[in-house]
Image 1: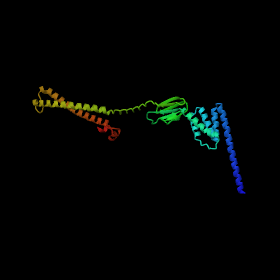
Image 2: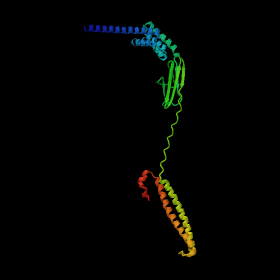
Image 3: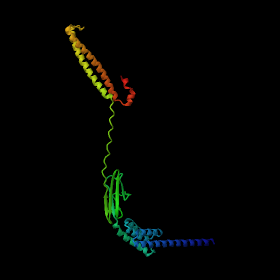
Image 4: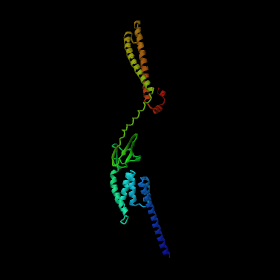
Length: 302
């Protein structure tokens, strides 16, 4: 009894499946007929929609052939060629309707006739491709130097790298082979970084060199006047003795000797002091802030 019930259930399932499949085929047939009527009236977008809905239910060569023809009418030759190609690869059973076999044969013929009409574009760039971004009709394009199939009509090619921009609009006819060479403006070299400003002049530097110069001049003056004083002293000693106890005619010479002696002393002492001060200031001005802190304030050097 259970076995009989199971057999009945299986039979009913097969009947339901067959009925459902027949419903899908009938729906697909109805959609296909609607598509044919729309195609005949030149409403290709609507016809394409019907054919594709029907193919989702029953994908047979006849529907694929009609879909490819509709794409061809719409100027979508790349898609049409691919749809024809898919139909030609369909494995049709030997017992399939004659229309299915004929559809495959017609798809092969129409595909062969369509292929030469599909335009070809080649986008190339002779320079360094690093950081180069190329788009075709807004979509990223990475097939530089290769042939690319596209539909007839107007297309835009854009290339960008840094601030360089290349834009080219092309009108492509059926069967055309177009080559577009990207030309970007030469990139100008980056401007050199400005040289850092010179460090502010330490006032101790010019003061130190001035003091050193004056000190050297003072030492020269002191040495020259000292030499003259020694010569004058030797002359007076010969005339007046070692004590320089001279008679009135030599008093002017005595005054000259004293002036020279004082000038020499002042020149030597002042020159030495200025020279030492100048050396300290020059050395101090060459030190950086850390070394200034290490040695303490400048006043401590005197």
